Image 1: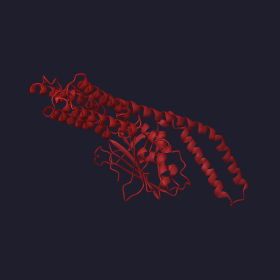
Image 2: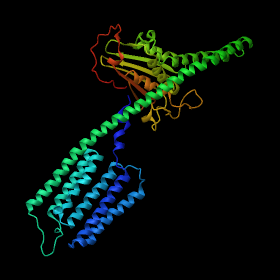
Image 3: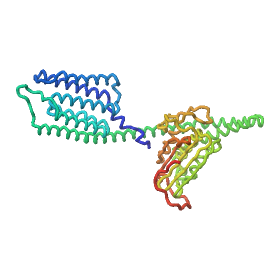
Image 4: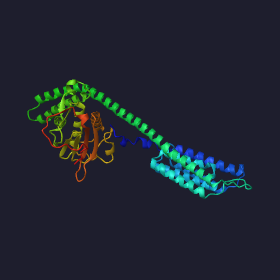
Length: 452
C-alpha cells in the first residue's frame, strides 16, 4: 500500500480558502461598522468614533491586500492564516477596550476566530490562538473605557458579574476548541481514508489496464517476431560464413529474449494452479529473478543472511517479474556491481537491491513508484537515451505490494554511491512452509533490518 504519510491528503484539504476567509472578514468589517455607527448615531451614546473607525479600516485594508495578493481558489498555509486570525483577535480586543471591555455583549465574538482555528489548524496552533484570546479577554476585563451609555445614567456592572462574563467567554472558547478540533480531526481522518482508497483503486485500475495491454502486445507481437526470427535464420544460412555471424546471432538471441519477456508479461494474471501452487524457496526465487540479467558486464552478487529457517513461498509470476524488473533497473545504472541482499528471521523477510551507480535524483526520489516518473539523472547505462515512460518501477512496485510487501527507495549513504531499494514482507504474508535448514543460531529480534 502507499504510505499515507507520503500523501499529505488531510493537511492540504483543511487549509483555509482565501475566498472563504476574505468573505468572513468582510462580514465582520461591515458588522463592526454597523454596530459602531448604530451606537454613536442611532442610540446617541458617546464613543471614540474616529479610533474605532481606524481599527475597522485596518481590517478592511488587510482584506483588500489578501484579495490582491492571492487568487480566490488559493489556500493559505497555517502560519499566515493563523497570523490573520491572531490579528482579528487583537483588533476585536481593541474595539472592545474602547467600548466597555468584557462588559460589551459583543465580547462573545471572541469565539469566532477560535472556532475557525480549531476546525482548520493543528491542535497546537488552535491552542496558541486560544491562549491569545484568553490574554486579550483578561486584559480588557481590567483595563477598558466605560461601556457606552446615557451620559446622565452611567452603567456599571458588579465586578463579580464581569468575572462571570469573562469565565463564560473563556470556558465557551475552551469547549469550542476541544469539541471542534476533535470533530474536525475525525472528519479529516475519514476524508483521508476515502482519498487513500480512491488513490489505491486508481493505481489498481491502471495496473489492470497495463495487464490487458501487455497480454494484447504479447499476442500481437508474437507473429512478427516469428517472421523476424525465420528471416534472421535464413540470412544466417545465406550470408558468407564468418562475415556477419556475430550480428545475426545477436539478432536471433534478442528475438528469443523478446519472446521470453512477452511470455512473462502475458502470464502475470494467470491463475493456473500448476504455476501458482508450486512452492519455491527464497534462494530459488532470487535466482529465478536474477537469471535473465546474468551475462551483462555488471556483476550481480546475492548475499543471504538468515537467523531462522529459509522462507518458502508460492511461485508467483508477478512477484518474480517485480523483483526481476528492479534488478534489471539496477544493472542499467550500475558501474560495476549490483548486490541483492536477503535477510530474514521469524518475523521479517527483507530483500535489498543496491547498485554503485549515480543513485536516484533528489527531485524525484520522493515520487519514485508513481507512473510516468523517470527515476534517475545522469544515467550510466549501455542504452543511448533515457526515453522510458517511467512505468517499470510503478508496475514492479505495485506487483510487489500486491504480495504484501512494503517497498522503500533511497540512496546509499556516503561515501558509497548508488541507489537502494528495500522490499520487506511480514513473514506471515510471504511464507507458505519451512524449507530444510540446519542453522540453529538464536533468533534475531523481530525488527526491520538495518541497511548496511
